[in-house]
Image (cartoon, rainbow, N blue to C red; front, side, top):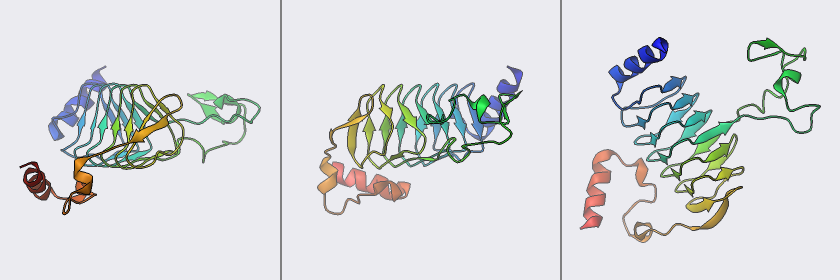
Amino acid sequence: MLKKAIKYFLHKLQNKKIGFGTTIIDSEYSKSNWLGSNVSLTKSSLGKYTYISDDSRIRNCKIGAFCSIGRNVKIGLGFHPINYISTSPYLYRRSFLGMRGFSNNDMFLNEDYRDTVVGNDVWIGDNVLICGGCTINDGVIIGAGSIVTRDLEPYGIYAGVPAKLIRKRECSYFNVDGFPQKWWELDDYELSYLLNKYNE
């Protein structure tokens, strides 16, 4: 408990937008990010203005800018072989969770925790599970409680177990002349200027 508290206060010195109990390991983030309480961020990177809500676990994931990630979201779930003698890591690892395994070799290393990509302007609802190795393209919305097992196409709205396309997003800005499709690549000043111009 003391170790967690020390880590929390060290992170708070660098960035005031990190909740209590959150752990960040080998990951990149910036001052424009917000991480709720009890978030685990491992071997991942966050684009600008992306936030992650409480109790979420993100592993081996590259997340773009302006993403909204709900509570208890799990991204980059681990792999278990289904066509091997067992799905238990004790049978295909030399050691697992500090105990000796039964195998002399570590097997399936390339399958464990495959990299996951989440594009820009993605909204992921509460309690969503995303399997490792998936690509969630720009503009996707994923409904609460969904399980994602494959790549999702840009600007699709998905929901269900497994997640299926419900419809495409419609936005009045998509067809406005002069408003860039990849608006998240603008700097803060340009984005503010354009938004206020088109909102008049």
